Image 1 (cartoon, helix red, strand yellow):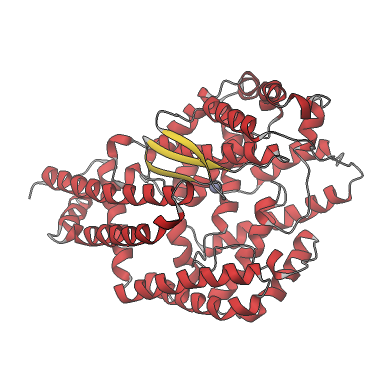
Image 2: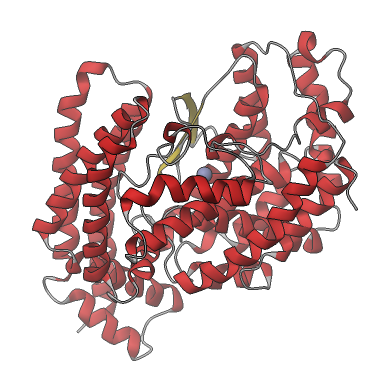
Length: 502
Ligand code: ZN
């Protein structure tokens, strides 16, 4: 037995699989940005074929007991910490894939694809009844999936584990209950305050928004020699590997903050991808650790930086130059207030940083109850509207703007929503900890000097890949476990003075 050879064999196999997966990702990116309409059918076939190939190659990774031998070597303490983590994570991925029989996967893919089509129609026609039978199929399959993957008594844990390895339903329930109890009164107080915050009005030519977005993403450190920015209906980021990371944005002539916020958000995701160790490409050590940690990066740049008063000391003069007409009469202070408008609204993707997590908590509570069999699909619209009233104080006028608004459930992404809110909590922990480590933080923002900030993230988070599980990584980076307080402190510090709250 030669462990060194085995490690090299494993790296080679993983790298070959990465050629397939990064090519698939490139095709997926192209489909959402540039591809002509008629190209879709062939591309779908190509993607399915490449996906099958990658799947087969991954299953074959242990055909000569390579992983078994390496796991044994790891147990005997013969591997470096990084190699041990690589083997542990590959074994984990393999175990997961082996638990899902091919017939199940085929049915799951077919049903969720069809359910997504039906959902689109149901939303367009504002008719939950068309979607309900399909959602029921998805939920049933999801429960089967959970039972195959984990403990049938705790189905939600198994689902969470796919998006946020190591996280449990119990932890999320406790943390979200605390978050909800803190957020509901804050949102009520803001809504009841007499302070009115005007909207930002005016025309913001799209070409100038593109130039500004490019400037600001470059300023925070997005490397355009290892990535690019394009347009798509829904902004996203896609990392093929650390030296090729694509982001997209969307532009509205009347809403300049949308494109700035989304450019910084996607750049945050992209900076994480660009900061993964290229030399380890293909191995789990060059992969992001979890969706919540990924989201913490995007939210950090979008909110903690991009909504920060000191950041706008640097950026506002540039924004005024880009949009002299619209911003001529608006001083920095008024602009800053306008971008901190809080609204109790219906749509998650349009909601502000104060109310956003309540939208997530509604979804988490419902989807957990669904997979645990505590509620039925037919009761969803009613329960949705009830929770929206209770937590956000809004009356949902129809299902299109209620339970039908998100694509996630139709595609089988159940257990995914919590990662958005967990990412928000982590982003505030990072903010708190970084300001301790870098006392001149505010000053750096005002100067537009983001390099020390990015360096902190690179060192504490990006370069580790999947060496530690998400919770441990964040504990090492911020010095504390998942917590609500830093996020609430962040909100209160900003919004209390803005809305004259005490
Ligand atoms: Zn995101």
